[in-house]
Structures are given as C-alpha cells and as structure tokens.
Length: 122
Image (spheres, one colour):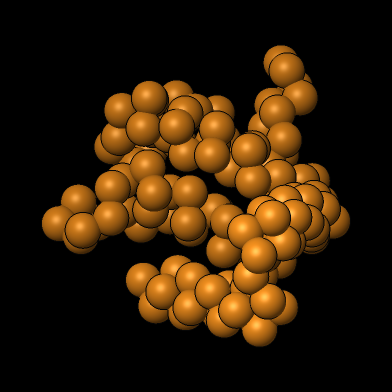
C-alpha cells in the first residue's frame, strides 16, 4: 500500500488517506482481505497524528470499504457488495423522499445527475 499525503493541497490529510485507500481498494491494488497497517503504524509512516488516520479508517468503515476485526486488525472488505447495498439503501431513501415532495421522475433524475456531476467534479 502506497499513500502520499500533500499537506499543501486543499484536501484535509484524513480525506487524502480515506480517498487513496478507497481508490486502491476499488481498483484491486488492495485486494479483499488485505490487512491494513495499524492506526499508529500508518500515522507514523505518514507523519500524521493517529487521530487523523483513525478518522479516515472510521469513514472507510462506514463506507464499507474496510472492516475492523477487533484485535485481529483492519482489513479491506468486499467493498463492491457492501458499497452496492449502501447505494441501494440511499437510492431508495431518496426515491421515497422525492415522491413525498411531489417531484416527477424526470425532476428527481435531473437532481441526481446534477449532484453526481458536482460530486465527481471535485
């Protein structure tokens, strides 16, 4: 696993850690079951505070990219299925909400396209 943190960049260090691990897990560079370094170990190797790495790990776990197995460590999860389940739940909640708001399918889809365009442009 190779991570590069650029303190001068606009993104917070924890976000850089989170994004790089997530991308490496998605691309297969970090295979499912790969054991990640401890929070302290990764923090030391990157020159970051342990809380910064812990925050990134918590976000990755929430996103289903990694899983913590207690004293056994932290591992890359089967992110595809977990991520897809999470996306399906979010999509269902969105669909329910826009239906209650009285939006048409076209209006709801346009809102999603705009949100995705903005999110992926970052």
